[in-house]
Length: 113
Image 1 (tube, rainbow, N blue to C red):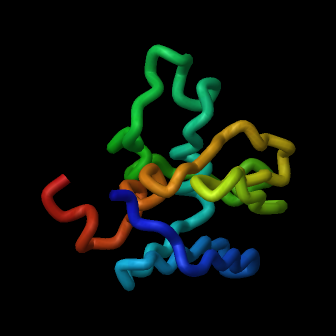
Image 2 (image 1 turned 180 degrees about the vertical axis):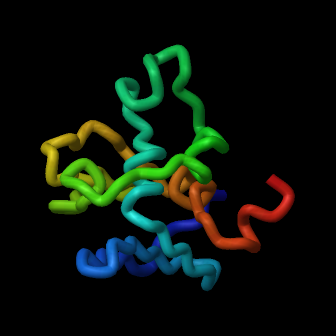
């Protein structure tokens, strides 16, 4: 069963996106990581590259602070996901709970990956 968030917080000045999960785990995502890991077909390189988990290279990809890495809004997609609206207008990625949980950049979650 996929964990579900109990709270979601966007800190624009710190450029951090925080999710507290029902397991008690807290994931803190830099905005650049979320944009690098955008799950839309265009960002992933086409439908043939779509998969349930993020690509490992997103954890080392550097994204500069610009309108493409600044969150404008976050919109719920049913009860299973979020869409992030970026300041450059990009809003095609649907970040489901499974994907966001696998994207957690903390040391504990990255261990053994």
